Image 1 (cartoon, one colour):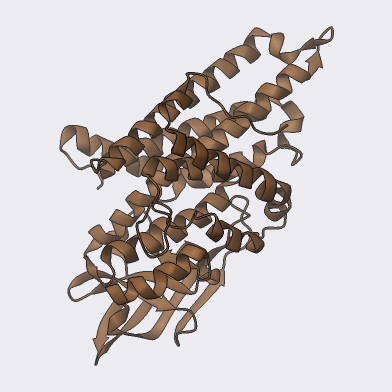
Image 2 (cartoon, one colour; image 1 turned 90 degrees about the horizontal axis):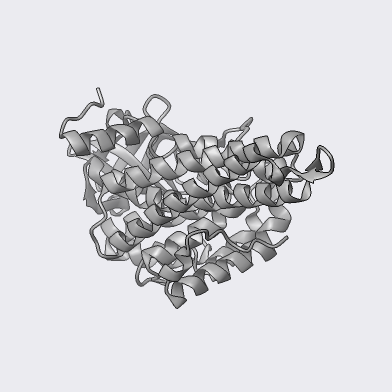
Length: 388
């Protein structure tokens, strides 16, 4: 059955007509173009490359950025896009998030006019793909310990180091690589084919299989001075990008939670056991559904308020940590409960439950683990940092 949405508490009444139109057009795109192929893409561990031009035409890449061919939608509209894309698969939303929040946003916010004019229109249409190189083999939750270095060499820079767990890595035409310099951590745009720059894909993933994950290697990799983002100085620039992406995650996982809930709800109504009674007639089943819809509703309200606050220019990184931490947790719980309600069928790929469950295990960890976001919130309410 086509997805009709999940709105227990009349939250749709809080959206504008434009916001509902954005959600509807994204939902229709997902139903028509993504749902028919995402199961095979996940099973075959392949990203559906044929969707990239269509994602660009729909305006999903860098949708909440202004100018340079970007759609310029509100942050609530952007969140609704992410919600509908992740309802199909976290890997698809991740592709779009990386392109927009982790590559286009920093170029838009910190890049030179030359960098903006060269890359943003191409990235907005999907003619060019980008990736974000921050995480290293030895430094994930502690990016300040990065070993990748950039040293001046005449009128350019020489980069040396390794990055890993990089979404879109081997697909990317340009990689935003963060490296330590004498003046602190800076971001560099490294183009595909640059001598000394190479990528290798990570295989054997049991999660995010419809997503390309790579390692990046820079060995005596020379880039021109114009490759540096002039406005990003220190680790704050990289972390600002992650804040943008985490906002999209907080909305996106709602889509996965909604899908799991609705599949389970329909299943228990139709499935009959014990004297030909539907599973939905049993108290324990209704309790699980009640818990799911309650948590989804609270997460919807949190995401909506975060979007409104972001549109007012008041959303802070610590706010986004609460959004990401809470909504990923409830999405994972919903996926697990749905798997339970479907019994043995819950592990079959005829249903999307196990795929979402596996994907969400990764989403809980990447772009700030649950533990790191817990400490961000803890620091905000106590004034005491407890990261070490």
